[in-house]
Image 1 (cartoon, rainbow over the protein chains, first blue to last red):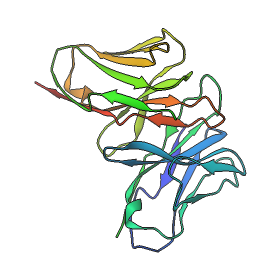
Image 2 (spheres, rainbow over the protein chains, first blue to last red; image 1 turned 180 degrees about the vertical axis):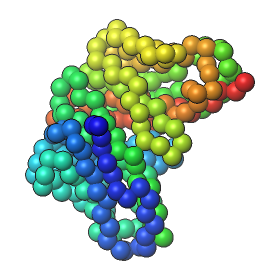
Image 3 (tube, rainbow over the protein chains, first blue to last red; image 1 turned 180 degrees about the horizontal axis):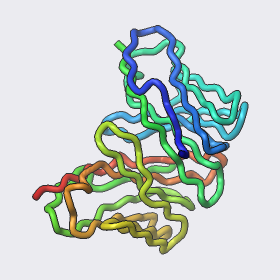
Image 4 (cartoon, rainbow over the protein chains, first blue to last red; image 1 turned 30 degrees about the vertical axis):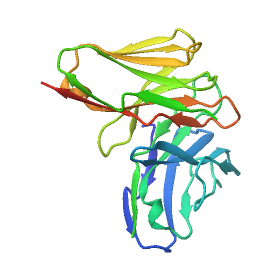
Length: 114
Length: 112
């Protein structure tokens, strides 16, 4: 089954404790991205990757890092989480540029930083 | 900068009636998507609209795109409770980054 898998689904952590949210897709998609969803703000892109070893900032990259060492994986790293990073995070993947590049979303990770 | 606006943000619908919700965007794009999100769940793809005049239908939902007006509409026919959810439109950037810019979403609630 084609899917985007995020882990963990729920995470409560303390300020400053490094964490990683994993994202994996099994569709051989080139393009992957991370979004955060906040009430009243919709979804905003954090980082994206157009292929292996190619990553770039989205609209709200501060406080986040990513890596793309393999095509299927795109982890989101919070080196020193802060309470304003409490949010619902989604990983998405798509084939890339082109007319039929529909984005598929993971199940979401609800992160609480206390 | 691409901006996407959805109106209204909340809509209470009566079962059996028809409704239309709107999505406006600010700059040229070649792709518009509609997603549905149930509370606490992920985003489910509903429609992909790729050209001016595109119309797609699935069940009680019909989406259309007018690229000249930079407007997409989602028409709901004979609303039923199962359609209660938040609906997002997202517009793809035309640059190298296939970023989707989302509207804030419209929460639909269908009452008997």
